[in-house]
Length: 489
Image (cartoon, rainbow, N blue to C red):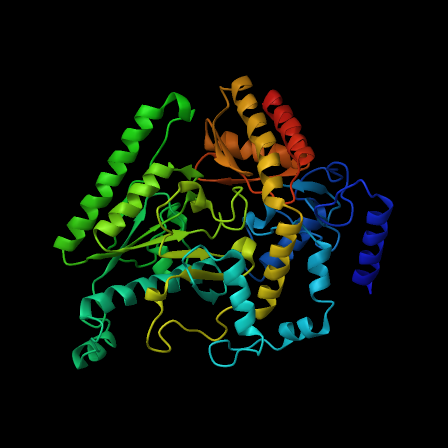
């Protein structure tokens, strides 16, 4: 009932304000407002204490009143209204409580997709093939005509790795090759040849997930990995650029060459130690690791290396996919001659999974499988998200607001060069670095007290991850309050 009344009010407001464009939901507040003396406030602290009695809750920043949050603004349980440029670690595409998404489950048939959740590998619904085809047509990377749905980014990468190994071993056996008795027996004992000593090459600073295989390719923070057994897989250096880019073009090109040479050296070294590299796993922007960027030329040459050694290239677009860089897939900025063989996704796309070529489809059943294999209710949301992105031209909006935010950050960098540096990014997927990790953390805390909720990554980076509905006016609020914090620091 509350949802229906809210939508009626929304339509009435929209009709009455013909010249006002709402990209998001019910009209947002004009600006942030903070009512508690500190964040987290007393109600959040009380809830945190209660939760901590049942599970480790030390990482909880504050508790959110999601029913009262709207558009680009998050409201916490203490009544603080914050402009959210972190958006649940880059996972909310249209802001909070978007009316089009609220309408999705006003449909009785769609509600049934929520309560009758199928084991998709065995018993998909009658509409599943059409919905998958629709997603492929609408957002599938060109040339990747197969999709495997999963639940999250970690399991998307974890299972995509399996596809890489399956494809590699198929080539090795030959097209008509069958499993031998020795392979079938030895794999049950975690030994070669059935469990072959293959590897994947990843990069220092990367984050690909926390499941065991994905964790073997994650190298952003020790706390993610310590105490967990892992795999002897090669790790190459990711380019570490100097900024501003235009003033450091020569040294950054040398950085590309050095890192690419190391990739080849590692591939050849692991071949010699009988642990051949089956594929390269890379983020178009290393996100959790500190918003580390590499040039289009770096990625073009990386793809050339993968083709030279006849191995796979997986582009992890879990955080960068969905339009936040101004293109639906970040790798589209790189002008690759052909798409990567596999592109993984999650976050803004609501469920996890990966697009891939036919070559990576297993020929035997149950090789890449689990009970749910995704979630039809999330596909329903994704379909509507795609419609809104197209109708409201949100990729263009990302470019406009991103330009304002990036220009403002560059100006702040000039004004406070002793505090901040290395403004970088695409679209609204932006970041700046601070002189020390402690300074970065202090600035995040002070911004929150001024009503701007941002997040950190890497050692000393502040990252911006707003919704696609983030507008120029929101960018100016962020910049004004960041300037105030830097001035007082």
